[in-house]
Length: 217
Image (cartoon, rainbow, N blue to C red; front, top):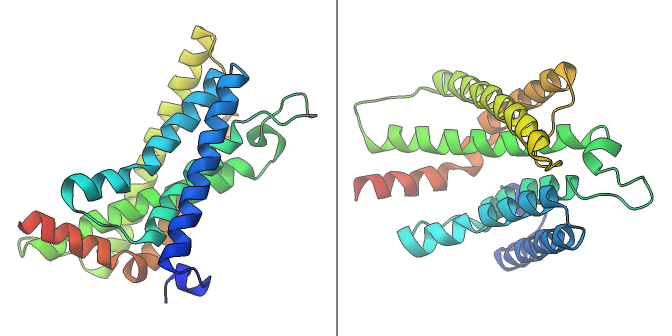
């Protein structure tokens, strides 16, 4: 039973929920423009574009994702965009600064999503060709290493973008809060990779099978 089924969300309700969340991200984008906050607007715009990728893949490549997976993609994009929005009454602090667990929560969701992509891709290759075979133990270790490597690359990107945005006078695009925060981010990245490793077979098999079919076409 999938997470969506446990929550008793049918496909229609899930699609409706995704649309509502996309509208919220759009509202954050408008708020960023209204507040003249380029950081908020850029993060919301990127998040909104990412949530459109499943529809783009379906139109261009006839690659259909389960509505629950589309929701999985949308939630971390919303959390990240919302985290950059100034909170009224708190000296314009953002959830990332005002709520200690916000950054960790977004890393957990985002890392599980990235690890899920890594799992679906690796399993699709395993199904597609007899030249490679990924046993469960290897797949588990691969996902952890893949996620940790991606996490390190992301932290480096976050650092350089943060430095560049400050030099250009555009605050709020990506922010680092020190070495301790970076280490905690990597820990939550690993937890996200573990979640994908544990639940990937149950929730991502359909995606990897469809991707394998596209590779065979």
